[in-house]
Length: 191
Image (cartoon, rainbow, N blue to C red; front, side, top):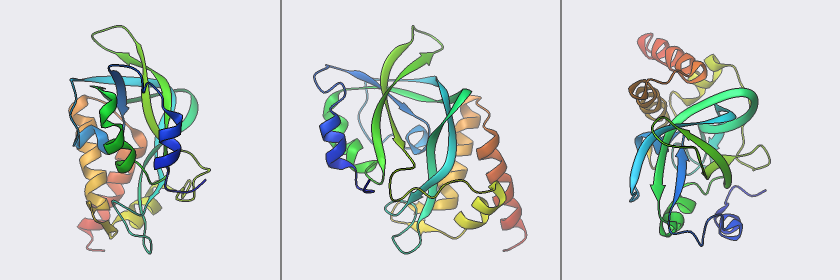
């Protein structure tokens, strides 16, 4: 599968005829909501875990030196915390462009703290896309992203912003926080 998924997402069309729907954010969508939304609330999804396994050629890296950003990996029993946005389908053009580097729209059930569960959308970069970098030890991921940068800024800032946003939600993520710890140690050591 190509890393550019804009056309494929348009063909998927999930909820295109709905007046509104829920969108689950688990990476940069938590801390950078650059689209209009009707409501925003903490949420989680089951059976998925957040991993820094997706390459970023367009936002936090370049084609020559891709960064690493979050995607979701299926894992039985896992719980992934994030933010749900109540949106209208007219934001798909913006979201499909923003998430075009390997991410596809999938439907999922979102669980909320203050209302009944609902079906919604989530963008996931599966391992079939050409930008997928795959698993690596957290220490190696920290070293890899430390000096990467793209049009949307430093890859290290993406990690730090995500970690801060998860803490603000009261959500713990071993993978993200361990990478952050290694990154901060590298920065403290001047590497």
